[in-house]
Length: 143
Image (cartoon, rainbow, N blue to C red; front, side):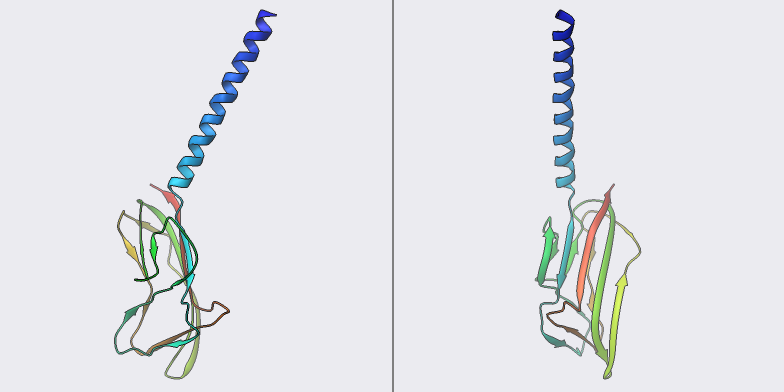
């Protein structure tokens, strides 16, 4: 009977340690959660501009960690790590239609590095309720 009680206490101790480890892991996951996605939030055209401008994708779908600023259009890396970014665009140049999906190769960023999307001189970008022009990114792996 003594051995059964001792074994039960050992098993309960292991279960308790596992719960602590799971809770610690969840905390680490949440601490490093970085993801955002937004569209331009306009209905119609923006541009053409006389100068290059930073696009502000201000219709936020998700902004986990609040590292994307919809007022400035800038994403600021909160941790050193490997990140993935993607954008979609619909627009025109010299009255010709343009549609594009772009992505950067996986980027290794340092804390404070900035990523944004620019509208070049002479180009027009379009958005609609169909979310034609978007900017998204997320942390793949912290370093």
